[in-house]
Picture 1 (cartoon, helix red, strand yellow):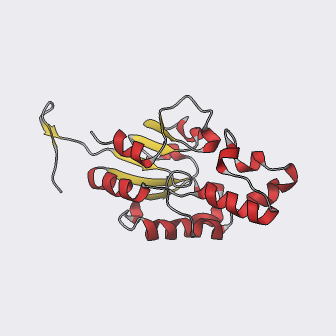
Picture 2 (cartoon, helix red, strand yellow):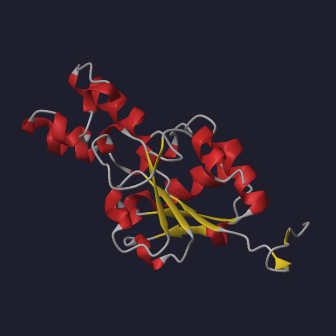
Picture 3 (cartoon, rainbow, N blue to C red):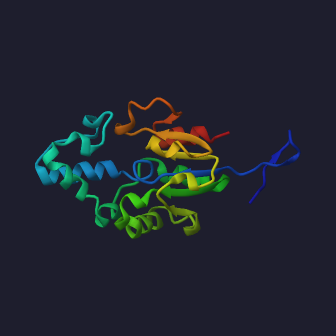
Length: 188
């Protein structure tokens, strides 16, 4: 690899450490959750309906437990990558140290499916750079790209909120709306 030189400091430029969340940042978990919910209940919920809330907060109380139960191991196996994600993550990996950081402890049955999904769609990410955790502050990185602001409170690096319907009202953190925005953020 060609090392860039920081002429102002007269030393090699340091590669950034970028931590990237998986669900709703790399993988379209919401699209699959809405699809499964609509199929199970004959509903017509769209992601746009969820402005400022999660699906579980939107659906009738009688459906909440069933909606949460849809997040089984099979749920994570066939998610679509978000548009542009594969290309931009590949570009980031060429210039920076990229880690996939997923709060898999929220759905422990998801470990294998998430790992297999990452290997299938992002084979260029080394397995050692995949982190399954509960508290993302354990990862030492310069940036964390995540759709859930709760992961930023103890994170020591710079937070980057990836737009999703549920975080539409969050205004405390810098935001990107797409993978094109992520490319632009790290283009310099």
